[in-house]
Length: 449
Ligand SMILES: Cc1cc2nc3c(=O)[nH]c(=O)nc-3n(C[C@H](O)[C@H](O)[C@H](O)COP(=O)(O)OP(=O)(O)OC[C@H]3O[C@@H](n4cnc5c(N)ncnc54)[C@H](O)[C@@H]3O)c2cc1C
Image (cartoon, rainbow, N blue to C red; front, top):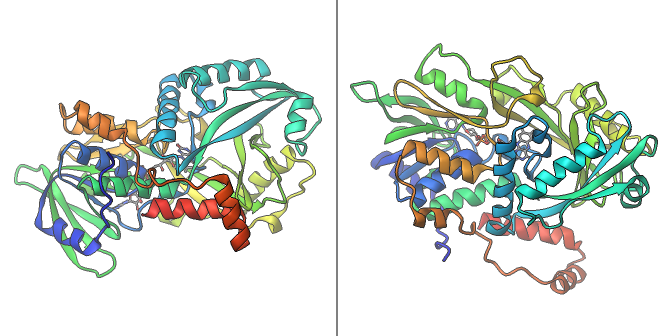
């Protein structure tokens, strides 16, 4: 049975933060912190989660919005990462059918591309195997004319063929909110616009909480907890340095930009894999979404403070070049760009020198002398599995069959009855709003409770 949905009451949460002693304090209200708060609460722990701005305002609302295995990581032999992500994709389709939907992808292959048709076939077979052949539609290889029948605006010159396969799309910010709501329903105390400004230490030097500032009122107070976890995404090193001044940075931040253009400018029936127009020929995507197509992403090193990142003209030029090369008649220019977003990948710095897009997306935990645990890396898709592993580390022996079952239960909003196609059409006729737009609004309402 789904736990009842409790409205979040920020004033009450602030009082609880100041008055109670928690088993676990989670700093950061992105998907990682939300997942850990949910998992630990479902295991019966008293959990507090604080977020300095709005929930999901960091990387977790700025991704490519795919719930996917990450086909390209197969090439880096990151089989464990891909297998776990594909498994989690399949689970999320049943846990959050209102937020995660299967989507057809088209992967065209041209002469000179880094991956041959044979390599693509092998990769997609492994991908389907990891999903135990339960992907909504297993992959299918296509010849050139079949590719063009499906997406006539793709470039024809040197086209060898391609494949269609299924992955999933989500609304990353809404997914994060649903996980936070689920954590709250399971008993977690959650508050946004509350920043951790310093750690509190017991006389032996162990971290026992944090000094907080309410960004809305300016009030300052302390929260006490037996364990402290920083799920601060791109800010993780800043918090580690707050705990241990001068400690080496463990993150390599890379910037990812997306652009949206009106769907009439890049008309698609599938999400399409594109290649960057430079020597690296990185995988990029063109993804249809309501009235827009979004395009991305870039992957470049970023050295400034996370809150200062911006979209630069070079980012826009890079994405438009890849799109115009993929769809030669589109002739997109800056004037077509309706909006953009930019996020930072909080990747764990690798030992060897390598390009940003080759850095592993796997996550790692870092424990300081005072016992503060920080997370680097991770994927939106694998948040639930990551949370299970992290809570196992923080609270050894706490995993039970009942908690495992609860962790796989549907997220808030999933049990609402879905209108039939005829009902959508009736509503569309009555309101004059396109069914696809109505469905988007419906999903927003379900996710926000
Ligand atoms: C361009 C791009 C595309 C991506 N695409 C995908 C994709 O398609 N699929 C996928 O699975 N993954 C994708 N990812 C990866 C995924 O988005 C991230 O791994 C994930 O969102 C990271 O979540 P997080 O909770 O660790 O970090 P964040 O979402 O950044 O959350 C950290 C939070 O900590 C808060 N915080 C920081 N300091 C403090 C403090 N002192 N006090 C309180 N709060 C604090 C911040 O405000 C922030 O909200 C993508 C990432 C990028 C950048």
